[in-house]
Every structure is written in structure tokens, then in C-alpha cells.
Amino acid sequence: MKKIIVMSLICLFGLYGCIQDKYQQVSEVNQPDNNDSILQEEKQMKIKISNNEYTITYLLNESLASQSLYQQLPLDIQIENYGDNEKIFYPPIPLDTTNTPLLINGQVGTLGYFAPWGDVVMYYGECDAYSGLYILGESIEGSEQIVNLRGNLHIERVEE
View 1 (cartoon, helix red, strand yellow):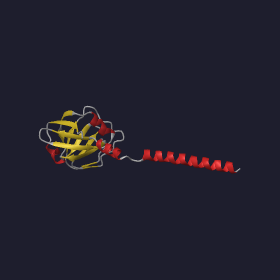
View 2 (spheres, rainbow, N blue to C red):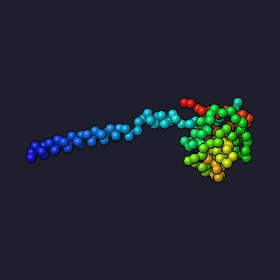
View 3 (cartoon, rainbow, N blue to C red):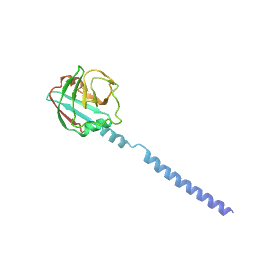
View 4 (tube, one colour):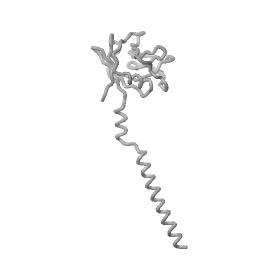
């Protein structure tokens, strides 16, 4: 009887060790790696919009519409004035707005997409929400120059 109890205890301790080892392996796999956060930062979608005089750099959000625009770059495209607070251009392929957040409150430097007309909007003044208006990103450099943009633009990815 003692042998059975001793053997049972040895088996239980052995199983406990295996379970602890497996738990440790799973925990290590699920722990965030510092390299993962660095890779995440490197994968940010940044674009540069420029003409011969001015350059504006945008950080795009992770929406499908932003990804759709990003995939079309580089582009050489005509910019147009619209209203008293925005410049617009038309990407060659309409953007996919699935799961893209609506623009609620735009500021100077907000980049949007007006799906009903298929135009990308660069705001140099404030704007309110409007049906079919989505947010693509925000300017991180040069937003004060949007108002001065004219003519042809070159739009490209910013690789870091």
C-alpha cells in the first residue's frame, strides 16, 4: 500500500512539473516583446504631400480607407480648392470605407475622405461631421501650409 501511495505522489509531482513547464512556455509566448512594439511603431503609415513649394506630412490611421489610399502611392495628382476650409483631390481608385471611423470634429491638418464624391479632403480650417465623411489621419508636419497648396501634388509614402 505504501508503494502505491509513494508511486502516486511521484506521478503527481511529475505531472505538476510538466504543467508548470507548459504554463511557463505559454506565458512566455503571450508576453509582449519589446521588439514587437518597435515593429508596430515602424509600421505606421505616413505620407508626404508636396508641390514645388510646400510639404505636409500625415500620419494615417489604421482604417481600410487609409490602407486603400496608402496602397495607391505614389501619386501625382491635381489639387482643387473647395469651400473655405479645405483642399481636395481624387484618388484613382475609390477608398474602401469598411470599418473606417466617421469624421466627427476636424481641425487644421485633418485628412478625410468624402465617400459620396470619392475625394480626399485636406482641412486647413475646422470642420463638422457630415454624412459619408471619414477620417484618414492627421498632419504631423506642415499643416499650416495646406491653405497654400496649388496645382499638381506629389503624394508618396514616408519610409523610416
